[in-house]
Image 1: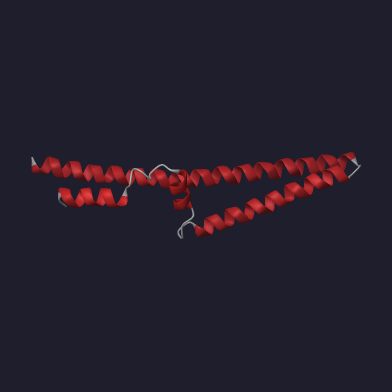
Image 2: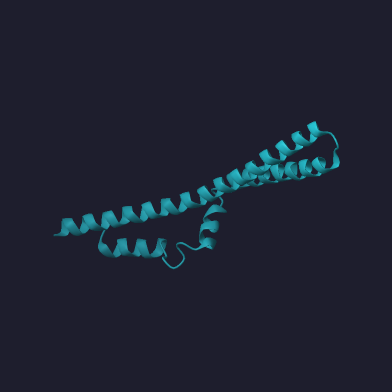
Length: 119
């Protein structure tokens, strides 16, 4: 590869103006490659959110202390699962950004080796 080809690859694939924007990271997350993971995460999110809402409603509608404790525990577990799903999604979004940075570094290393070989 010559310098012009490397520079063209870097300029075409990696646009620094859009690199770290939230919309770019979300676009990387919601692509065809990640579709099955995204669907599973959204289904799990809605299941646990529904269970949390159901347990909150049942908590206020019951008079027995044992059932109130049970519904409160279910509510707390469901809310924690919702938070865990969101944290997992955020980590997947950042994983794609880190992969992009590694690819950029690999291209820079190739460029530097070409410069060293030419000298």
